[in-house]
Image (cartoon, rainbow, N blue to C red; front, top):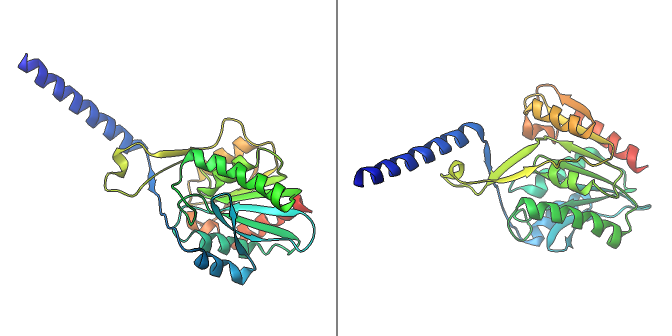
Amino acid sequence: MRGLAVAGIVAVVVGLGLGVKRYRSTATVTPYDLATRPLSEVAAEGKPLGLEPVKVGTLTALIRRPVSGHSWLLYWGGNTSTYFREALGTIEGLQLPPEIGLLVVAPPGYDSEGHPSPASLERDAVLARDWLKQQEGAERIVTGGFSMGIYSALVAAEKDVRATVVMGTASVFEASDASPFIRLKEPDRYRIRKEPPKVPALVIQGEHDELEQGKAVAAWLGARLLVLPGVHHVETQRSPEALRQASEFIQKYLN
């Protein structure tokens, strides 16, 4: 009996080891880079671009209302503790006219209360879109996102949106809290849905940023794919060519 017990324990350990090895060999898990700062700091970052803080439910966002009309860009940034700084760098580079309103939304954990999750991302994407319509009278909306933010942009684009532009894309993004054992536990998995939003879309991908993923997302959306030669992931959101073409695309569907 003792021999059988030992054999059973060995089998379990070997099985677990093989499972861990298999998981480690196929998965790339990104640590969440979280930060929650005082609203005063968020306000200071938005001020140079004429954006001010606003609460969208429990979420922190920065808003610039249009000087006229009802056209809006609804935008989400990527997984970084400097969330608004990075996102506003993209917003500044787009050089959108003042007739287009801007709403940059921070998910839970990124200057908003709570912790990110796939479920909260989907819920909050719909919340932000509907908030724009109900509270600000938005009639024409284009969604945009970079990296982790693409999943919010794509969910929000499923209804009452003119178009979507996504940069630094992947069909699946896996993330977990930073830990020496990050690869040994089940991560959060953010995925594109089975059915794509039925809107015009532009996919922008750096040549050195998992280009096959960009091709897969563009094919899923039936979208044009803009490939940026020599560009890596983080550089995509501030590439002059990416920003020029994204701006033209956004304005086309908001005019």
